[in-house]
Image (cartoon, rainbow, N blue to C red; front, top):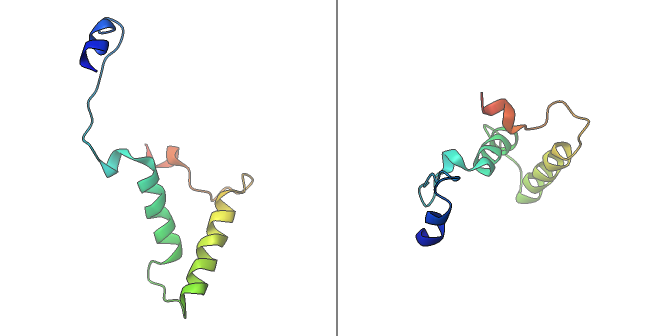
Length: 77
């Protein structure tokens, strides 16, 4: 609450954000990256093939040895 924040106003600077702001939500950047890698300008014969492509990309993303993984720091510059 605001009363609780007032107790710490000498040590804390509060920055109020909009209720939802996709530019400030890191997962939105990953979804954009995933969409570009998987479905941008691509057609799949069926939903199962699309799902398989998403799973493959997520497995590549979770492999820490890959240099082509999505990294939020690359997009923060």
